[in-house]
Image 1 (tube, helix red, strand yellow):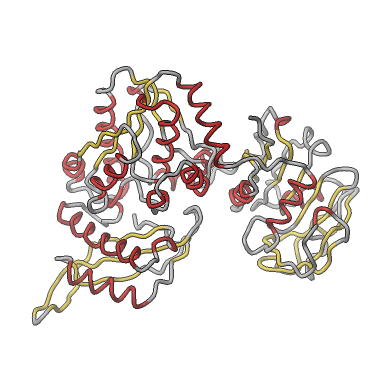
Image 2 (cartoon, rainbow, N blue to C red):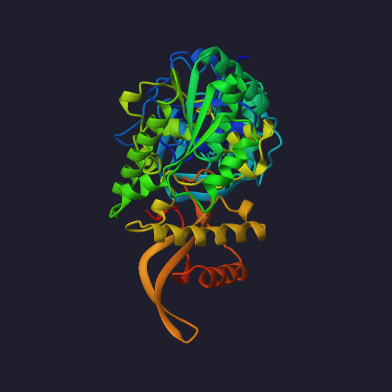
Length: 511
């Protein structure tokens, strides 16, 4: 089935992925492409959205898209930088703003009887984020909306289905942003809302059957959401020809290797559990540099995975749980730091000697869509609701060098923290949680004796995609009970602290 597609041209805005997520929430399929790499098959897109940008249309680094096959031929929505670009290079005027146009604002004027603003009323809150402002509309420009400080907050081009706004409808602070995108895409661009989890499953399974035929596929399971949903899609398509390998690197959570294997048994998957914990921990002995630890884990994982893959006769494909944000970052419009940051949490690429073709069933989906697809296949909600867990596991939560004793301590601490989050019904309100073992000892008193033992930090954050995150304000009573339980039950720990740093400037993990 061919879907109506929406093309999002990325000018480097931090909000571009949010635009795509909001469009997908309307059950409309969209793709993000760099502004200077417009797909050659642009005819297959029913509408186009231009993103914002940290650049200025008045500066030397103007980002010039080739809109010759788009403007006036397809419905187009220009957001922030896009709106200023259309104005500046089409007879309008953009100047530095005399007032700070950042944060919440309210629409003070909306032109009546406009489909673009249907069901949106004056006073509606929008989110501004720009230092330039449109002083004069472009040729053919018709004013659609203003705020108290921004005269030209929205406009359209006469004779075209081209709309432009100086605010961001994709962020939650724009209260009618969802309605505005729906008005543009459904009412004006007439895009069908047919991108649903069920449709995705049906189409993906058919595509996988056609692509893989009777070939054998190997997949490295992690116990996480992405690899598990990828496994179920492949299982539906090729059944026993899917060989799943779940490696215990000795850095998983307490009892996780056994628990996850048991969970997979109930899903009908062909899974082999490989306990390589001694091999990993021996290789990590004496290593304290975070990057060296990651590289060691990546190298040993590939060695273990390769050994196991060679035991399968005639395997042709490697399946991976790559999701859409990973794909977007690899073709970033601005070549920003995100791809480098991301690599820290992955095990690294496949070595040339494995010579396998790669299949990535989830590469079109965001994380929340992966969960919805899993739910549509009746996968266990406990598994689908699992917090993200870093590829290197507890290695990057033990600061400094690793020993078996440090792993034991952190597994015990982590288990108490996570179990308490579940029993207090806080687990699903948190995006990711974990404990860090710090490379310091502190003085304490237990009974009548002074102690000199380890300090652990607890961390819980809320986020939508991990790119930004805020610390979660957990109840004091919860923290008190959890701290007491850790200190009383985990030998070697006498102090617990709670991390209240947001990302940025801090990262979610400590290494």
